[in-house]
Image (cartoon, rainbow, N blue to C red):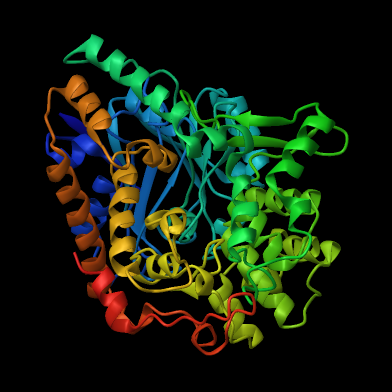
Length: 568
């Protein structure tokens, strides 16, 4: 049996429910999207009392399996107007499992003028405590205060000042193994949903006494070791161990899909100044707090995260990842890693998504509010967001709204969510994924780039995108890190065998994929019921009208092809 802890944020009533269905066994996005689909009215206001937030860990959370403790957070997105699942690493998934929880649901909402509350979950029950002392403070200071009160070992979930103001790019920060809330479920504005319920933090104490039980302990141990071996033998995941996701800078530059100058180009002169080797060398040279390898959760055999130090060797930001390096770097024509790391730290502290805010700043630069390549101006625009000025609030509402306010047509988004770090005209497989995702533009939804023989052609990309939508969704379906997909993409047997050894439940590969596809169908149905029309699954018209200079390509994907990629 698997437990869901329901918390009514208006009445402060709590209750536990027990379920044995496969969706609860798997957890992750399988569970979060189904809970949203069943329990959230599709036509509700995202920041109203009818919306709910579901925090779900996965089937192997709390065990020795590498990279298995991510937490999926689901709700209706204020940014896209549709269903949302955003996931994060850290220790929250582990602490949930130690409390015997598969899901925590935040329901209802108190009056808007209610005081801020912290929900504290421990072996002795659930408590609401005053959270007003955290209001207005940055996420880093909130982390310190929460750690001081509840210990650095607690699983803490919090939001930043942007979420407190209900801004649409605000994320939800989860504590890492060091007690710092730096692991973000960043996309879709779910931080604003949490704030609408007047919950400023959720703390899961490190006093849980529930330990995993196994149907076959030896088989599970052997299976866990096999996952580590597969990760270390795989050329993709093993490369991430040394260089992290920053390795994608050179790959995307070579393929001419590195977003540059507000997604008008796919190549940036001087990209080597912000690539993986430069970051690796900088971290090594500066020493101090810097780490080229870092785990966002334990256990993790990949350790693709990093700790980027300033010139004195002191922590500046952790982590700095490719998506941020592109959206806050090449997209703005910035060639300084210190600038990117500084912007990343500000975003983490105010609690906003680096992709959406980077894209919004690109729009602002195109509108003439700053020059592309101006490091000081880019930081100044991030400070506008930190200070919640009128301009800062516009930028923290996402690139679609920023473009509408600032009069810019070339706005890189789908369903209001910023396009990730792969210029879509040069990679039609990724473009197909962006267009067909129920979550808004999302690279993790179906990552095709490494498997596109001819990236600039749309031929065969419906089938390719759908193939990788299933492969990517498999990881989300059970709370696994998405990078594990490289090692099991052709054979889910090792993970399904672990479920068998853990629970004594046999799930075949076809049955598992059927569960994944049904989840996708439910997500698209929710969006349809929410009133999102098929024509909303388009890029801005400029992507269809204007060719990317380096490839000569425009978006030529039709609505019919997008609809086919969304059909499950």
